[in-house]
Amino acid sequence: MSAWVLPDHIADVLPSEARHIEELRRLCLDTARGYGYELVMPPLLEHLESLLSGPASTLDLRTFKLVDQLSGRTLGLRADTTSQVARIDAHLLNRQGVTRLCYCGPVLHTRPNRPYATREPLQFGAEIYGHDGLEADLEILQLALDSLKANGQTDIKVDLGSAQIIHALLADQDLSVQQHELLIESIAKKDSSTLQSLSPILTAPVAKALLQLVDLYGDSTVLNKAEKEFSAWPLIQKAIADLRWLTSHLQVSFGFDLSDMSGYAYYSGTRFSIYAPGVSDALVRGGRYDEVGAVFGRKRPAVGFSFDLKELVSIVPKLPLKAAIRAPWREDASLTGAIARLRAQGEAVVCVLPGHESEVDEFDCDRELLLVADRWIVKPL
View (cartoon, rainbow, N blue to C red):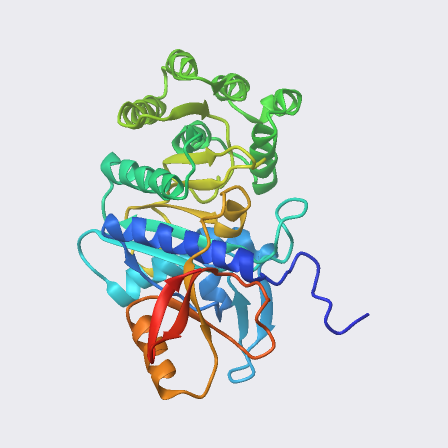
């Protein structure tokens, strides 16, 4: 095998795509900054026991592991950034009020999460800590939508659900770990036959409710059905009211899937998935996860979202090439000074090296720097 062949599902990002990704990254970070979110940059690796603490333990099989040559301890390469940001909020910032944080950096997965996906996503995300009201859920959903709109995505759909529903139904059921996992898997697959076979391990009302739950997906009529079917569970009634409140504050196409189990061990309240044309799976996932900081000794309300910029770039039309000025190369102090002044003004100046006058590049050179009457002048091409 050639030494330069990369591992499966790992790829170099070449100039055109890299430029596009960087443009999207800046748009997303600027959008988050406009909402008052502060940028943090957690390390790519840290001690495994910290990286996989609490809800993040579900990422164990997706996390690359290695031994630290300094300490001999096991380190992990992050597969997700949320637990790291929770650690920053809990220990390094330790603020008493609301904290808004955003991030953008690579994560690594031992396996791709779907066919042809990269194992090195570029994860952008935002999180708000310290407020347990729906106002925070609404803000984070608005920011997610505006981040996509800033990148030209308008034909999008939001699927809403709530982790409170399944937590409420299974709260007082006496189940083993294996039985619990099998139930969650069956609900996620909407496998009614398996759920029916598991009815003997559940109380009768819960067994009936779970069979009804797997059919509760679709448009807003789903909420009306859920209110009737789960009238005996006050916590579920509140979860449905929360979903109604969120939809009343946003002008976007909504769908509902009350049996969506993605991130079951992670989310504690409302959760959302955002879909866009050209992407088979959800482009953005987010929601409330109030337990995320508990393992770091500071349980705080938390809600956030994340998505892969590399996936987004595959469906977003490229922005026009940056206009640039073509300049000759020569040992001339006046030319060097003219180029420096133009660059200081924010212009891109591409020097054409001797013998390469006809080569194309990643810039739209619509002007050139010419020597006219002993002065360097910019003229249109």
